[in-house]
Length: 133
Image (cartoon, rainbow, N blue to C red; front, side, top):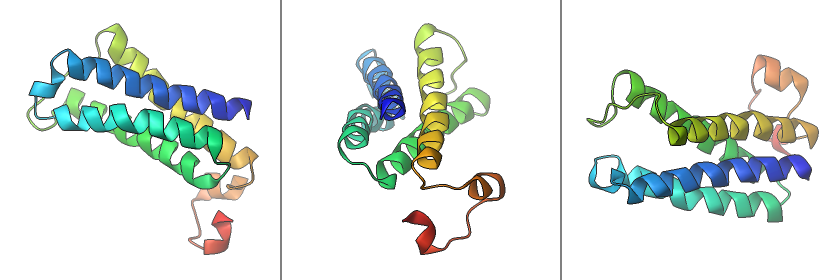
């Protein structure tokens, strides 16, 4: 359960950074609604991780981290909905680290709790429903 706490803290931290940035003016940009979605999703996923011992909250945490980090990478390279950002500032790095932790720790917990096998992590998923327990 301790690593689930780490995953919960990571998604909560990312959500908090997005909420703070939303209040600091991102709400007036085209990506504003996405920042509010992250601000709400972070705490919801954190609560699910701590109250529901199932693979689904782990999937949400990994997906949250990957999609949020992926969106930032796109915004920092080619731009996203007219927003072009940079890898600068404490909040940017705090969010990025939180999202990487959510991804890696979420996958680790899924593996440790038996939802993922080593073969699935190395070679992909077979798509069988029995793999998800």
